[in-house]
Image (tube, rainbow, N blue to C red; front, side):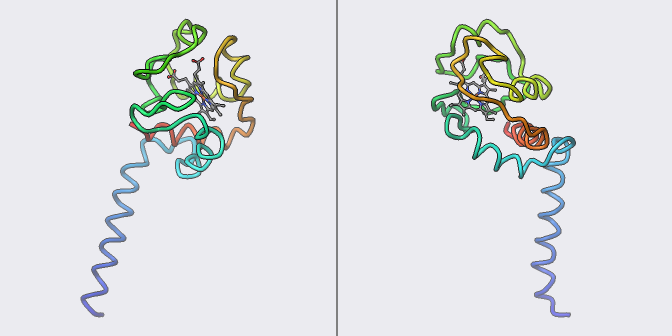
Length: 131
Ligand code: HEC
């Protein structure tokens, strides 16, 4: 076998190894890469995952584990500020599976909820990777 063939093989193996190490702690419930597509269709109209980038809604950078209403320079509704939630995976699951105004009456977020629980798990896995 030509020595040249080993180079792409090694690169591929290293990529798999690093990819696995990066994703494994987060991918227990859902598929983060499928979740990235769910984010694009369902959330990206109003949200960015870039640190500090607020759109109609606040940046979702580091959202999993973050206290509600704490993205810098975003003007939240009183309803969300007074909820005193921490966005755990479970909390996000409950919040996003129903209309936002039902989960948090008075919120500015106009979203009807994601009823497909597989898509919801994928989405939350994806959001868990954004830190
Ligand atoms: C039509 C616009 C819109 C869509 C679509 C939308 N959101 Fe929002 N979202 C908002 C707004 C506006 C707020 C601020 C709510 C407030 O202050 O009451 C918000 C707030 C949030 C918060 C609270 C953030 C914090 O800093 O506490 C989370 C979490 C969230 N959205 C997740 C999502 C996810 C995930 C999706 C996609 C499934 C989504 N949103 C879809 C507009 C939207």
